[in-house]
Image (cartoon, rainbow, N blue to C red):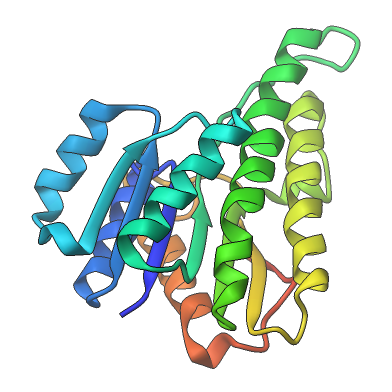
Length: 221
């Protein structure tokens, strides 16, 4: 039994990931900005109190992220994995027409949130000699498209943080990888990657069989 932290846990992919890891008997620390959505997710999972921890946290606040990590460690004794699913999208304009406010929004959602999550949780994960860090990103991070510059720039920075972490902890038992999707197919219309496929990739990266996969961009598109 391991402890998995899921940020952005109340979205469709987060909920499905929580269910998949719970079914395998793991402990869950589910983080989100919405208490009502966390409560709904906890009710749906119906896990014993000793297997689940839910907490609202603003990951743009480094102190709040570190406090959340301490609460998770206090309850479960350690952390084994961080799955970062906080995100959002702003785009549709050329670079000259894009606003500085939209750039700040993208940097906050994709860079500052993961920066604070990594700083808060990675020391605890690394302390156990085995760990997994994952984030869902986009191929736009390495091949930007027109009118997507702000999102692409933020995703590129996010991936740099994850992949730098992979190098820093290489051979330590902690791996860090990126799962890239163009879009998430929430309606089953075949446009994008189904959440179940994303979660299946997470389950594989979490496994011991994936111990040598580190610093990778896994393309699910």
